[in-house]
Image 1 (cartoon, rainbow, N blue to C red):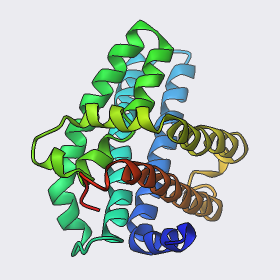
Image 2 (tube, rainbow, N blue to C red; image 1 turned 45 degrees about the vertical axis):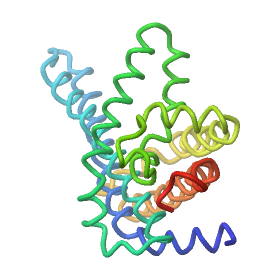
Image 3 (tube, rainbow, N blue to C red; image 1 turned 120 degrees about the horizontal axis):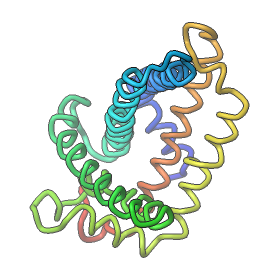
Image 4 (cartoon, one colour; image 1 turned 60 degrees about the vertical axis):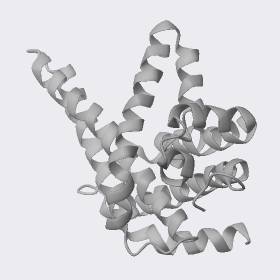
Length: 226
């Protein structure tokens, strides 16, 4: 199937819930960053506020990416299977995606304590973990480890994976942040904020679909629901 036709099909399946999640995620992230900056600039000192909002920011950075990627993967899977609704998909996979994501973060943190670059490499190496959880028959049967399976897929397709991550997770976000970051607060610039969130939604779906296609090319013949 043509990539853009498939992408349009996927977009129709998950655009609304993903768009809502992106709006909430972006604005919570912006709000928490503002609170941390204000606390740091407080001449009287507000170390407790820094810790509090910093902690909330960490929690947000774990919860929302998992919700976003799981929603996007629901659209990918629904395009090729017949899931009744997103609730069924979440009920089956969301908890396990959270667990494996936390395991991934533990690995990444452990490698980052040694040097920064090994931590970055471990991050990109484990990028396929949610795909393994939601699409691998062997994982569902308890025959493989999600982190090892992700590393295996990445090592066989490292150039494609790094190119996708560089373009959609680094290059484009840096450009958007440098130009439009001040327009992301929905209570200050609602139209611009919604437009940016819609763009973020589409870019997330495109990058997820590209990674999904890479994952499929490796495991579809012998170990995949899709």
